[in-house]
Image (spheres, rainbow, N blue to C red):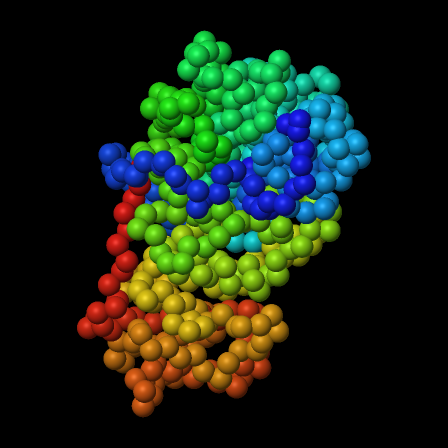
Length: 483
């Protein structure tokens, strides 16, 4: 996720075009292939994924790629530092930015440790930035020398210099589903930004219709790079295509041809052609936000643990309480949660991020049953309680209001009712709990003092029960699968 600078005051979520900006996007279409619909169902079962923005830009601790574009501004003073240090000269900034690979040497890069931490956190799939908008490739592409394995990049001699191979191998060994992040734009490629002309925006700096041969060369380059990723790195389940401005008519990369090639090599591949709509945005990816209500199709919130997608010194990480709260809310609304952490310049995950992941993992070990392979059920939320379901089993997840709030004496909700005579159990606790219907018609699950004193986890507590068959709100929300 160019003469050219001005004062920077725009959103921190500039990884790519924001989800809410969907002007001109075609309406999505239902899946034409039953196999792809089945793969999308399996994707929705995963619920929790790990994303990493890692590249040469990590050395500066500023926002990735976007400082190169005049029209896309930065949000925080830290982002301005590299520009100010270069005398507020954009040409000099661009020169130095594009030279960052010559000093990129993350000697403590350890994807095995990344994968273990993500697994312990309860994550089930990974999406890794193989190439961001700046064009620097984190794998051994044969189509450009602007890559981590190039002779002028100090890291090229490392045994895991092809970071994509190392990351995918490590995560695959831990049972993760593999996702490729790839930017369709490339601001280093002469077929996108002609170096002989000024580039003021994120778009090509020439008329693609007037110079079709130049644009065709770029399209072939994109096609070739994606084919490398689909053929040289083992099984891939997700293709997360960023840079939504790359779409017809001005930036037609012939998605029909590209998708057919990718799926020829990776049958059942799910594609997220982000913010474009149509048949190749198989699932939606709201960025840095959770929809107000469930969407009528598969979706995934992609969000940073801190304020930035890439590494930033002293980043402000969300608390484990807030992250668990978000995970519960997203799953109750039928989505997946793709949580991003930016590795440090040395290749390690930040200690504070790892601490958050350990705390989330402890919670998931107790409550994962209420998260994985669940689907939404109306009304999704009732006060402090959110609902998920598996068949006729309902999970009512009470999320404490504050970081240090203790378990309540009772968990109550009005809208769903256990079947008569059914047991109500709390995840992580042996034996059933007493429950009743109070005078107001609420379901009240009483929590014994012993459990209040020694709860099975922190932050949020899940009880499960079989739903009374006569309750009309038990009908699951309709799911429309997009492929």
